[in-house]
Amino acid sequence: MNTTVPSNNSPMIQLKGVRKSYGIYEVLKGIDADVARGEVVVICGPSGSGKSTLIRTVNRLEEIGSGSIICDGNNIHRPMPAKELNRLRSRIGFVFQSFNLFPHLSAIDNIAMSPIRVKGVPRDVAYAKATQLLERVGLADKAHAYPAQLSGGQQQRVAIARALAMEPPVMLFDEPTSALDPEMVGEVLAVMKGLAADGMTMMCVTHEMGFARDVADRVWFIDQGQIVESAPPEQFFSRPQTTRAQRFLSDLRH
Amino acid sequence: MISDIIAIIRDYWLLLLIGQYPNGPLGGLAATLLLSVLAIAFAFPVSIALALARLSKAPLLNWPVTALVYFTRGVPLLMLILWGYFLVPLVTGASVPSFLTMLVTLVVYQGAFLSEVVRGGIVALGHGQMEAARALGHSYLGAMRYVILPQALYNVIPSIISVFVATIKDTTLGYVINVPDLTFAASQINNQLLTQPFQVFFILAAVYYVICWSLSRVAVLTERRITRRRAGTAPQPTAKSLKLAALTDQPS
Ligand SMILES: Nc1ncnc2c1ncn2[C@@H]1O[C@H](COP(=O)(O)OP(=O)(O)O)[C@@H](O)[C@H]1O
Ligand SMILES: [Mg+2]
Image 1: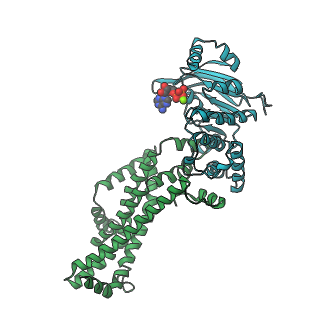
Image 2: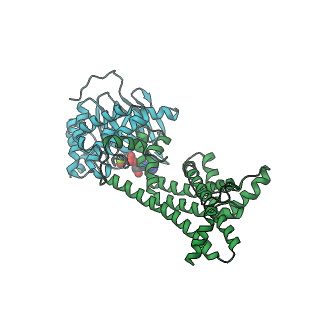
Image 3: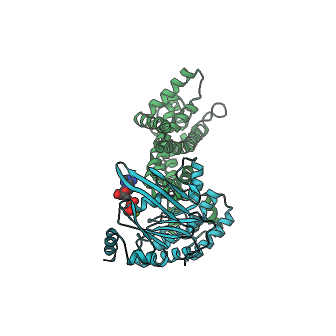
C-alpha cells in the first residue's frame, strides 16, 4: 500500500553507528538503520529509551557524538556553514508533540511565513499554497484563527501543514498525538495516513499501534538507546522476537 | 495660586516650549521631547542587540555586554552623566554638546536596563518556539526576528513602557550638565521670579505627568488591541490586510 516508486534506489535516511551521550549517560548506543524512499517507519519503545533523541538527530536539533546520518543524500552532521544546515533543515519536516505553533500568527500565516522568509517564495504563491494545505488538513475555514482559538487536534493539523509548506521530501513526527485528548487523535492520524498514502517518507515516534498496523512499513522497537527489533508491523505485533518487546507490547495493551 | 500659574504660563510659554530658540539652542518642552524620543528610539534597538549579545554563547559578545549591564545597573545615572560630561572632553579633547552627552548616556543606561527586560521576555518563551523555527529552516536571527521577538517583546510591553517612562523622567537630570530642556527652562523662570517656586515647579510636574501618563495609556491600549486580535474577538481584518500584518508584525 505504501509502495511508491522511489526516485532513486538509495535510502532516504541512513543512520550509521549513531551514538550520543548526555554527560556520561549514553542515550543512543550505536544506531544503524535505513529508511527507504516512500517508507513509513514507526518508532516505539519505553519512555526514556531515546526515541525523541534519535528523531531529533535526523534534522540536527540534537548533535551526535559519533556516527553519521545521511538524509536525502546529505550528510547532516558534517561540519558545515550555518546557512547550509538551515537549508538542509528546511527540507526535513518536523512535527512536535507540543505542536509549537507560532501563537502570534494566524493559522495561514503560520503556514505561509517560512516559505516566504526562508525560501523567498512570493507571497501570493505562498498563501495560495497555504490555503491548499489548510484544505488538505481539513481546516480551510480556520485560516484566520489564531492557535489559541484552535483545539489541540486542529493545532497539530496546522503544524503538519506548516511543515509540509516547505515541501520536504521527508517528515519526522515525535509523538504527534500524545498531547491530545483521545477524541482528537483520530483527526491527526487521518492526516498522517493521507500523507503516507501520497508516498511521503515518514519517521513517526508514536504509540498508536492501530496507526502502525495500518500505515507503517516497518516498526522499530527501541530500548535503552538501541534498535532492538525492526520488523513489518504484522510480524512485530504478532511475533515480537525479544522479551523486552513482548513486555513492552503487553504493557501497552493494559 | 491658580492665577499665578496662569500668569507664569502666559508670560513664559514660549520659553517653556522652545527655550531660547532661535536666539539660543532649542530648549524647553521641545528639547525634552526630542531628547526623550531620540533616547527611546536608540535605546530600544540597542537593548535588543545587547539582549541578543548576552544570550550569545560567544564569550567575545557575551562578556563585555554582561559587564556593561552589571556596571550600569550598579551605578547611579547621575554619575554616568557627570563622567560623560567631564571625562569625554578630557580624553578626546573635543567639546561635546551637553545634549549629545545626555542622549548617549541615556541610550547606554536605559538600553542596558531594557536589555534585561527583553532578555527576560526571550528566556520566558522557552525552547519550543525557537526549535520549531529552526526546524523549518530559519536562521537563528531569522527565528529571533519573525518568531521570538514579536512574542517576547509583546509579553513585556508593560515593562518596556516603564523603562520608556523612566527615560523621559531621567531627561530631567540633564539639568546638572546644563541641557537646555524643560526643567532647565523652569528653573530659569524660577530664578527670575524667585518668589513662586511652588507654582513654577507645579507646571513642570504637570507637564511631565501628562507626557508619561499619555505614554502609559498608549501602551495599555496597544496591548489590549493585540490581545483582542489574538483572542479573535476583534473585528476580523480583511484577508489582505491580515497577510500584510503578518509579514510586518515585527518590532521596528
Ligand atoms: N537535554 C538532556 N540532558 C540530559 N539528559 C537528557 C536530555 N534529553 C534527554 N535526556 C535523557 O535521555 C534519555 C532519552 O530521552 P528521550 O530521547 O527523550 O526518550 P524518549 O523520547 O524515548 O522518551 C532519557 O533518559 C532522558 O532523561
Ligand atoms: Mg520522547
